Amino acid sequence: MITPGTILMGKDTLRPQCFQLEDDPYPNAWMSVKHNLSPYELEKELTTAGWTFFYMANAIRATAFGFDRAKRVHTALERLITNTKHQKHNCLQIDDVATYSFLGMPYVSISAHPRHIQRGAVLYGHAPDESLGGCAKEKKQW
Image (cartoon, rainbow, N blue to C red):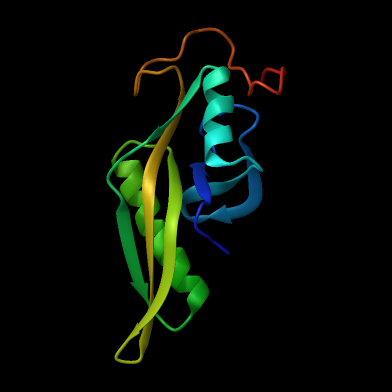
């Protein structure tokens, strides 16, 4: 189940090794990132390895109605992911998941912030030709 703090990423997104993906697929072939670091620790690891995890200031929100909770969440996530991809970002961080009811019709509202991970500090800058490294604690390259 999706919870606040979950980071979703396109399955084919280039990423350092500390960004391992969970097996559970989400809409549009996006996967959740598994990590056991706090947001601060994660940023520090990525920066040390030469990666930047951009945080976009404008939150996005999606709502979906229906009686099947799983379908509601799936539909709302699909809308968020489509919006994120439209903005040309490759990650999404869930801020809040709330369930409501309007005239007896249940709905879910999910808010999130688009994120973008890339090697280098210039947003949408081209990565150098060198091989892509992992996080600071992992000296492996992939």
